[in-house]
Length: 201
Image (cartoon, rainbow, N blue to C red):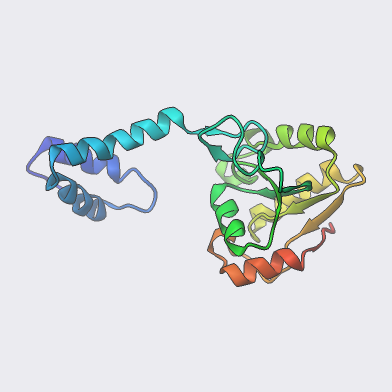
């Protein structure tokens, strides 16, 4: 794509580096930004810088937060006896939208995927095991995507937790095999949580 401005070209390159955004989409968005006032563009870009500087991971569950401990972990009304293990914040948002769950979460930050070079050490698994040992919850829910990688991660965690005398459950298969959790509709996801079942190898 030959553009008439090097600055325009660089902006398109940066935006198209984001997942799901091709060069044509990036150009359309950049041209929209170009037509905005300098003040609007400054406010727009500054919001990203502030996000990068201030957003952190919750000390307890690794969720995204502006504070040391996220609003879910700090809420005394949440049921601390249940920990739901998810891949990332999008899964928390999907589950919270169902209004069917009142426990806590633990964000792994991904799933085990040898093809992508992601192993157990690349995820928040050690902090999860330490947390379980300290807080001693009654139940752990595996709420990872119903994919081969999700099942591999579930199996790995199950092996680590199998001797802990903790009830280990997983979402019922109302969530389609091969589907990513964040794309499940709220009703299906809510029922899958309510009808969760014991995890078996």
